[in-house]
Length: 242
View: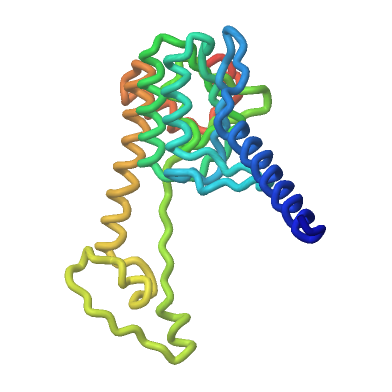
């Protein structure tokens, strides 16, 4: 065999061996079961934006934030794993809508049916941050935390005057006083119908918060509303709350 052919063959063997090693490493990274000691707690951090599914992760890139799919998958496995004693949920500055919050709550409620321990840790509580904790059997707040649920607000953006300064006038086919999507470009402020529909929406969301707290804490809705109306609550009233 010629020297050049031998060198080429060795190079191919080295490349194939390298690919085999890399492939094996990737396989172990994504398929190897982590070590789980007995009576362990599954710690889940919820914070920032929350996606339905996590984006593709590549080697060497930092892991993406937890997604609804991740939460479902891990809670399902934890509920069936005898080594897992319970779940520790740490919530801080969660940025997501109430629909996803309700979905998280149902996942936690389903896990609670496994009779395993569930605890929630909160740094600061706001409406979107407190709801997941309502489905836990125990909620803990560290010293220096705060409970502030002063209501739900909405805002709208109007660009009519800005467009006018640019010499632009929006012409949009509009049907119905309560069809408010085009108001962003055709109005200077909220119309009465726009304000009415927006107020109805935030009233419904706030009532959902009150009803969620009442149902999961076995309290009367009127009592819950009375407590929330006193928000922000001092630490002495929140430090021992379950």
